Length: 170
Ligand code: SF4
Ligand code: SF4
Image (cartoon, rainbow, N blue to C red; front, top):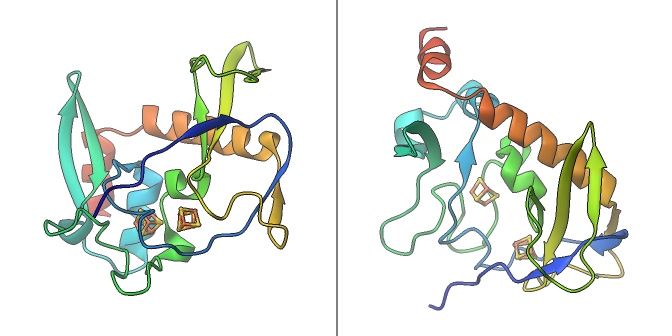
């Protein structure tokens, strides 16, 4: 099956969104986990051996959500229904998608810079997501996604091996 890829469109004003639980969304993606994500999933009864992959990127340890070998689907996605089995506990980055917060502009017409605490961000949504612009959906604002994006950056920055070992020991 061809993998769906993020097709960015500038997210500069509120849009409606309602997830359709299509089967492609949670496949072939690189989902970074923060220490809070890992702790939440462990507290919910999941074994890190079953959902966590460790990688080294630019000399920094990264914790990434594991995928199934046969279709690169996230281990928490039901392959039949497309539903997330850990929806209430899902990682922060999954709460942001189909939106994206970037620290650099992508050079797309209509994009806009958001500034907060002296830092600049550019927001996008995935045009390939069929839940975007659904009239029955919830209204999502750039401000709320920006807040989640900043929280993700801060949590990822604070994610390291020591913190992970502390969670395992607690
Ligand atoms: S692509 Fe959009 S509609 Fe489909 S499962 Fe993902 S978030 Fe939901
Ligand atoms: S945790 Fe849930 S929402 Fe996130 S990639 Fe896996 S199945 Fe999708």
